[in-house]
Length: 65
Image (cartoon, rainbow, N blue to C red; front, side):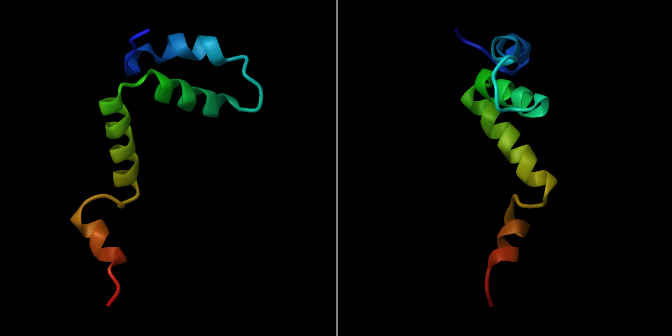
């Protein structure tokens, strides 16, 4: 089944009875399963940017003097 991020509700319906995960975790899991590799990369990049951990400025934070 070829999916994209917009198809995550279909995947969610298949996994919503899975035990051990709360509702939020199931939604995140469904989104990651439905996303293409490029969409997963974009989600990861957006997440890192939201914490200021992406780009040249983020590299400067971790360089030791």
